[in-house]
Length: 273
Image 1 (cartoon, helix red, strand yellow):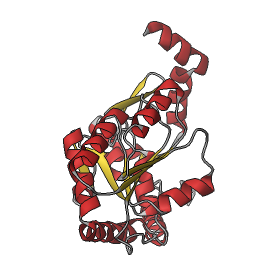
Image 2 (cartoon, helix red, strand yellow):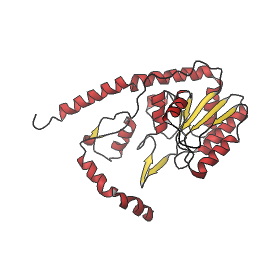
Image 3 (cartoon, one colour):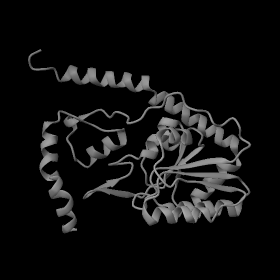
């Protein structure tokens, strides 16, 4: 641990520059309310140093991929196939249970580059499960933004098999609290249902609109439900998209930002005004 601190902290001089940066900032803005609230609860930053949270993603005209319900369920796991940040073993077990217990057709796309031997092994294990009802799509290298967009647009569901904690240098990060997830932001951008681990914190309202799992069994049950009952899938997708358009449309985000700025400057007027 000491050698890691020496390698990571000293060359980057975080212990010098981060305090200096914080002193120079008038306010800090976080990507959502949950991260902002966590920072305040942990007393990492004082209330008067925080500018009201600003979403890191917005949703535009959301694609409606729910009309043709007589087709396989399209599932996407976006991001690098990296065991340090994601638990693919749980997903592999879940898919195995799905195809063993039902005849529902499922297509899975791993929309990210495999990292090292771990990433290659994950792909191999998924490929072993392929049959008439389960098809896998994967990539060996970096995916272009155009292709990535196309994959997400035509997906039905995003699975984000996040580990509870990750790290940046020597800093511990907790998903949903000190750190948001790229997959969570993709849910907002593309309006896709997302399956998240139970420990990923989301607001009470949003929790009712997405799916949470706490084991391979509960994830398998959720996948089977959506693959077998496409009317249920359509209804859940519609409710989520309505919520996202109401709360994360560009016009809504910009308007709220303008209100926040007006409030801030009404309280913090320049000294010479």
